[in-house]
Length: 328
Image 1 (cartoon, rainbow, N blue to C red):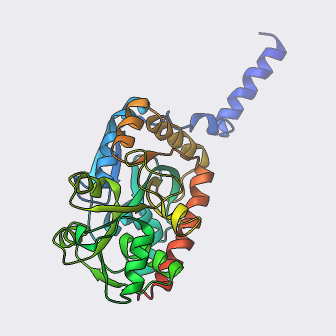
Image 2 (image 1 turned 135 degrees about the horizontal axis):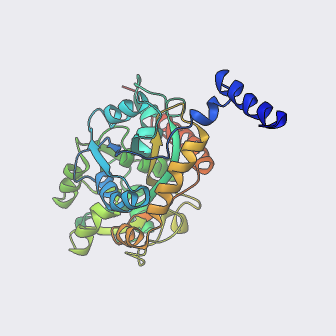
């Protein structure tokens, strides 16, 4: 062996001995190499669980691994969310949360088991869905202007239902009432299904909820659609105007969901996971199924989702304060 070749071999040997090549040797295998757990902090068959199960097959195909949906409901979706906040940031435990877990709860829960910003790594906004404002037929109103006129004719006498103080329906309608200076009575229930039932029975005047929940009652002629939230009309009920175009320009509140990982994840791994879920959301089959149910796929980048969360957090915490919701 020539002196030059000998020195080259010796240098490599010294490098190994002193760990100079450790970064190469310590590289983790390609992600993912085992099944991924997707924690859904809501019960099976709910609206968020429904989204998880639509996207699941496409996500499995994109990552060539199983995605195991783990429903962990309870405590305003904080049980499942807190579980992910304390998990290892290796990409194998993810959260499918949304507006309640990361934007609304901080405004209505006094002591939370996690911080919406500090304790998670944002991955992507998965979906968004506009809410629908509906009235019982006995109200005799069909348009946003007629509803406002009816409320102003009977200040502090008409009622609207929600799934509880500080819930999405409560805060969303309180935003609208504050903008229009309307005096209405909030009637909280233990679940939005019970509130809708009361509107169907004529005991409550109106309710706001996601369109996938209300649409069957509207199509059956049991509830009257008044308006949609969001900045564009729904493709499922294009005849129903938006609040933004009829009452309050720019009024754009909606339900939304997203994927989070535990805190401390590297940017490289977060980007890799983002690419997988965005690919799944953009699958034609997934997009078609979501839109058919009144949900729009999003698939934002990590920076876009991070900025969106901060804006929504400020918006909903502010709404809780304006609605005089006392954190519990």
